Length: 274
Image 1 (cartoon, rainbow, N blue to C red):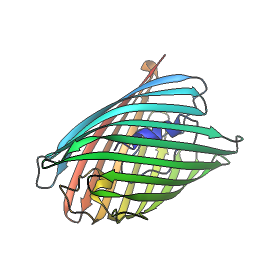
Image 2 (cartoon, rainbow, N blue to C red):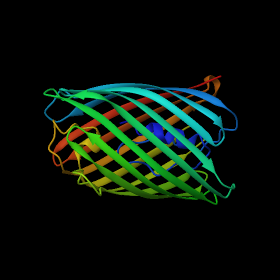
Image 3 (cartoon, rainbow, N blue to C red):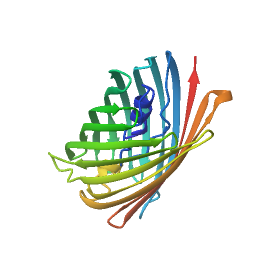
Image 4 (spheres, rainbow, N blue to C red):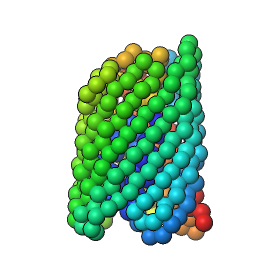
């Protein structure tokens, strides 16, 4: 699942960025404002290594439309290959923001669904989420989200709470906590992140730790046993190109699931069109 899509959707509504998901660092990080209707095309590609396998990779293509400064929808298709497993899914995202300038609330939702195969049997990939983010005095943001995961034989609800604080024009820190309340996800994840915003480049990095199901990190359960202890770290940078109305983001991510190690590099590019 490419959680970067949700971050782009929320940002395009003119909010400070939501606390980063431990699953995948967002592709866009500066709190930007979209004042008119706008269209974007987003392309991404990634390569992955995994202990004991030949690794894999993937790509996605998406479209975002901002109706105004407060409402945006997006659609995408993504394909991923990892060892003997592969899965393809479509995504639908949306967000709408309401409230006065100093106390705004963003309601968002996302759905990802498609078929897959783990090398032995076919499976269905289905992940849905609904959430709300409140931003107060342009500095403090609070997030509540519930995510439903149904992939192979792994299923359950994964609520998340998060806080982020914008310390000034150049620095924001975030923290989140996820605790599965149903099914067999067995997840209790704590995550922290820091973002730095500058005129020519934005930098970010984060860590996450705790027990979790491999599916939460795009590892099909046919490859890895269900619940393992996670240690994750990632760093990234995004650079706008105003002359061509685009933005390039690179993210390096490292996951250690009780000795099973996954490393990935993701490149994303946003084309502003129209």
